[in-house]
Amino acid sequence: MKRVPLAAALCLAFGAATAQQGDGTKFSTNINVWKPNKVDATPERIKALKAPPGFTVSAFATGLKNTRIIAVAPNGDVYVSRRDQGDVLLLRDANGDGRADGPAIAVANRAGAHGLAIRDNKLYLVTAKELFVAPIQGDGRLGELKMLVGDLPDAGQHANRTMAFGPDGMLYLSVGSTCNACNESNVENATMLRISPDGKSRTIFASGLRNTIGFAWHPTTGELWGFDHGIDFLGDDVQPEEVNKIELGKQYGWPHVYGKGDIYPQSTPQGEISKEEWKARSTPMVVGYTAHAAPMQWVFGAGSAFPAEYQGDAFVTMRGSWNRVPASGYEIVRVRFENGQAKSVEPFVTGFLTDGGKTHIARPVGLAMAKDGSLLMADDANGVIYRVAYTGNSGGGKGGTPTKPPAGPMQDQVNKGNNVPLANKRPETEAKGQLAVTSSSFAANGMMNERYTEYADGVSPALSWKAVAGARSYAIVMEDPDAKPVTPFVHWVMWNIPANITSVPEGVQEQARLSDPDGVLQGRTTRGAPGYYGPKPPVGEAAHRYHFQVYALDKTLDVPFGADRDQVLQAMRGHVLAKGEIVGRYAQKQQPQK
Image (cartoon, rainbow, N blue to C red):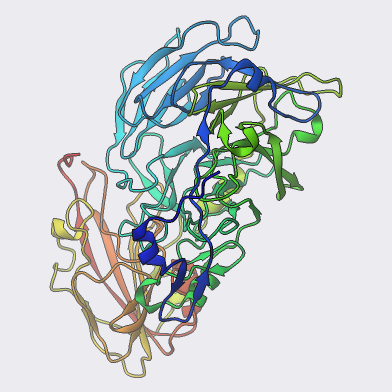
């Protein structure tokens, strides 16, 4: 086994495997780069794969090359994407013998085809930047692909988008980071997006997720769980791969914090936010697993033909990394759950690493439950789809339709703060004084210029207000009461504007903390990110009204950066000296070019 030294550029970045920056953090380690050689997946090597007693591993299909993500239709048809070939294949097992009946049929062609999802007899396909949908025909082939979204973030290091429909009927799409660890310029990178099935609306559900390719909803609790990829170049055993319970509005540490709260040494948060502050705002992992194992697709076992003890657990493919000696991953793991919470991760199917870890026959990627309750696993090295079936005698399930998670938990999260009055009509903002607000960017109740919208530049307009005696700070909340289905849509939340400042210029920086004026904080909009998010009413609708509401407060608010509107309003209760607003309007008449 040969250990490959770190590339010269990386040695420069890490200072001979030592990273240090001005905040005093330091990390020293030995870094390995190692990729076992690929060998053929011969019948003898497949036969040597290891699974728990009662389970059998066999080849469902072979010779398919770069197979990636699997989706199974209700009738049992198996769809698998091939990223390198840029297509989607259809396989069937009509006779139920555990093997594909014949050669795979190509049913779609799109460069970089990767993530798949099926709902309402339609197949959804995502590439690095585009989301498509096509009807599934009676023979399993697809009708014409229609583009729903054409402006997903640029890919960078993690181009492999994945998606799944949640129990709330919305499409959840994972967008990985462009880098190992950096401050992203596009707030949609390193996130979980929530998209309407028609592609017309999307928000950021959660952030700070470096690359959560595998995720699914617990069949009993309806909560969303995912396996995030850890940061590279921190040594053989750091960073662990992270099991996270993913919830609305939470950030999960990346790029500045990882694991249970460890601080990454090289990066620096924007806006002069300290790493301890970033840590305090981040949700730590629930369970960790071997570093650099590279988690891929995730599926819960409920509804499978596996024994009852497996029904509440999850299974995840581990593709294996290049950043560890000995190599990790190259397996299917079982995530054990107790009372709906992840407790541990353990190997389930192993043996894809061969010759003592010097070679491999598969790099596991896709994972899905077949109609008969077995697991199907796609290998993107030798192009084999493996079938993991329970053949023991301890009372396996009957298979069939997977258990449908309850929709309530997801709906409760996304409906919080919905269908409420505008901020200046709520009891939290009761005030005796009035505050005059003006703008040099638009007239009161006038149409806003396109440059302030997300159809164009997306810069914030200038605002001014009259000083209020006794004010210690000012806050701004911008809302759209005409938006649907989220009403009102929150476009901007800003607070702790110093008392000696009575205006904000056009084009305020879109980050959680401003360093000039120092200490001004911005919160989470309905879009899911801090900072101004401009109007984006659906094309053809009557002009929406955008209420820029300004509040004079008798204190500065002890609310952390990234807080949402309701947290800020609650902190304002009883401290509003005066309030006022200016309303701008906007309508989009023409469909923008994609």
